[in-house]
Structures are given as structure tokens and as C-alpha cells.
Image 1: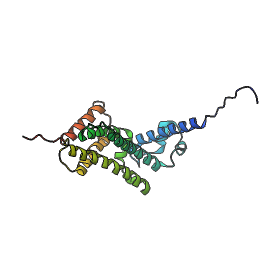
Image 2: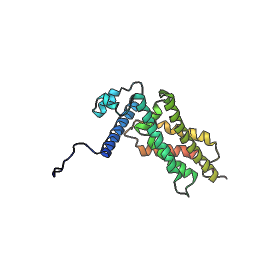
Image 3: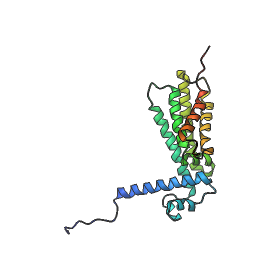
Length: 212
């Protein structure tokens, strides 16, 4: 064995895996941006490649086609929302149902106000294959049930006025999803201000009215 150390130009397996993950994340972020801006049918993978300074064939190393990219974009934000539901479960035990609901809705609104969030609400999941659509709708159902659960908890502890948890959950999610349709990062409207206004308007109607 020669005594001189040999420096290999090839990266270790773990480094290659991490590099691939970073590049895949970059492709996904670029795809979400383009989908949100132009819609699914008007989006060209040439535009995604241009944003990343790569050739279109490079994209197929990470996703087999445009539909796979769209599915991954929608799944990404819905998985994040689902994760936030778990965070809501870990909120301080003394917090009321309304306080936990407000905290969850704030995180929901911030995620919708991203390229991934806009992509998810602006593009119908009917663009996906049956298998992908079913998976996406299952995640959406889990998120809906979490909002209903938080509303029900608030009703039970008296912090939320008596209401139908199902209707309330649909109304809250629908209102927050609208952020992804009209919000275009207007310089005069900060994300924090918009989220605060939305949450204030949405939750005022949930607070029990004092008697007398």
C-alpha cells in the first residue's frame, strides 16, 4: 500500500444523498413558484429548468413528469399543515380550545401564504391521477377533522360559542385558503398584518357573547 493519502474526488454516499435531497427541494420550490404563478396547464417545465439554470432532462432525475411535481408540491404543504395539527396537540395544557385554534389558524395562514400554499389552493386536485388525488384528499380530510376537533374543544370548555364544528371548520379553512388566491405579496400589506386581520375577523364571531 502506498503511504501517500489519496483524496477521492467522489463524495461519500451520505453526502451524495444529502446533495440530491437539496437539489430535489430546489426543483420542488421552483415548480411550486411557477405553478402558483401560471397554473398547471400553462406551466412549462422549461420555465422550471430556466429558474434553476439546468436543462429540462435534469428535472426528470427528480420527478418523472409534471404531474408528479404537482402532486409533490400539494403534498408538501398539506403534510406541513398536518404536522401543525400535531403541534396543536402539544400546546400548553392550560390553553383553551379557542387559543389552540387561533395558534393553529395562524400557522395555517402562514403556510398558505407561500408558493406551496398558493399552488395547493389555486390548482385543483382533479389535475392529479386517481391514486394521487385520493391521497391528497385523505390528508385534507385529516386537516379538516383537526380544525373540527379544536372547535369542539373550545365549545366544550366555553371559549367558543355553540356552533356546528363541521360548518365552522369549512368556513375557517375556506377563508384562509382565499389568501392563496388574491395575495400577491403587496408591499403595503405585510404577512403579519394580513394574518392578524384574518384571524381577528374569523375568530370574533366564535367568542361567546356576554349575557346581560
